[in-house]
Length: 318
Image (cartoon, rainbow, N blue to C red):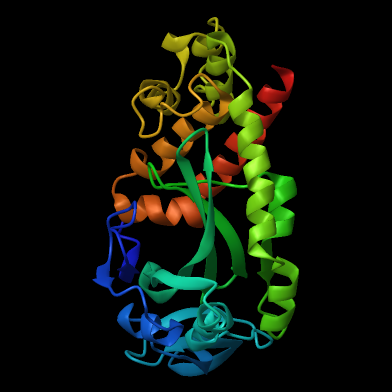
């Protein structure tokens, strides 16, 4: 698989994926956009195909990058692209008020996905030192079939795991906007609500998971639910055990006691859940940029949501 990251910049400490060029942590959103190499615009052009020597309109339009003429995608005539500058300006109100600071930004998949991440100046400590910080992620896709996605995402500092949200919490902390309507920053901000309130809700959930203990049998069952075994009937017919777990499930079990922060809420469903986020962010995948894309926009984003929902279910039954 080709590398996913095209350009990227980060402020502060090296992020969990280890990618990008360092910049100062006092940049304005527009300055971050420039340092991240995404200070280009999307131009709309009519799309054509050559057929028997004739140039025929497809009835669609092509989104073309201004800097190099690269066609990013073909879309319908009613598609409304959001320019990168609009996406970064979304953060200006928060940054100038001192509520957030720009953290990372970049371009994935040859410019088809532009994103920015701002650190919310709010955090909480769990279990005597397990710090969780809140970030606001804005993904601006220049790709057919993808929606603008603005969401709060927690990050566990001790291991730099990007945590996920339960499905009920996600509805309150994430806003998706299709490209067939005009993007309205004010409406999105209103829908997102206040970051501190969202973080408090997440803290309650984390503390609950940390208060519930797992047994080894239930832990194995949990890992098998998150990373199901092969469909091979010969394996499925065997009794569920460590030996019959899938490779990734075994990785979770292997890092359970060795992952950074394993000493916090040891033996709890919080520890079990974080072993999954550690594997998705630091172990799975061919390289760091594939893990980055998968954790935020791909399959591992969904897997972490399912892992959290499943951990809550197991904790409730404990």
